[in-house]
Image (cartoon, rainbow, N blue to C red; front, top):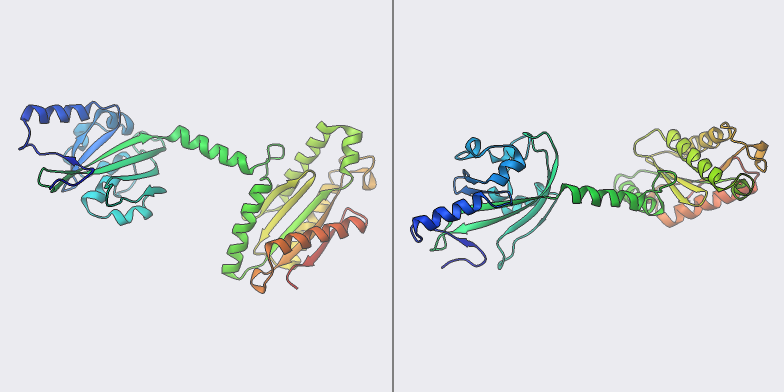
Length: 330
């Protein structure tokens, strides 16, 4: 009995001319496609697949080295998983995929491929399906490919824009929320501490009133650069929290070091000597509130933010151009 939703093919059951026509049709499909027999050898490698990979049919037919078109080292392609009956291995091979169902035996997956022959990286959508003969016996697997690189890069660019602040080029409030959640969960798992520095530009409304909004924008861009330069570890996160307010997440850090980083930021900004007639000492300054917590002691992300905000309030009312630090888990 022929299996549902599968391609049924047998040279013995159809005319030779019809069989050759089917092969020729696949050869000239605009969609890149190749077919493997039950030994995992390539029996069809169409013209579109040649163009996609840079590998000619003559190089690949009769071999099991079709992976060379897509990857730098040997690994299964989607059609190999059908031939080898290893469909459960898709998780470790593809960045995204759909599992087959009883009524649908085709495989769908997507991956970044290095395309060694062409020296380019492409994001490919792959579809693979079994080929059965008229008795229902699996005799081959066909794989078709779609180059979705442009669409994927556009999607990634949109995702970056969604979590980045266009003015200062640091992540935005949404990006901060995502980053803090990830860092907090990691700290719980690894029994580490997390510090949060919340900064506010002193007398920023007056700065905009005196110098204008374009100058205010440039002031914020300059401060963002200082923050990125003051957080020396790749794991540290700088974000624009809103308006003239910034936050810095310092994972895996002790209380004393967090205080030193905050003090260095405050000092670095005042030393820029950006003129501000209404500012402390006639220059732009910032106030910083620091909160440090060990998540395993029962604190929460909300409490960490609240303590940092309250510490910032204390710094403002203590004279500005300074930092105040408090624990968020005591």
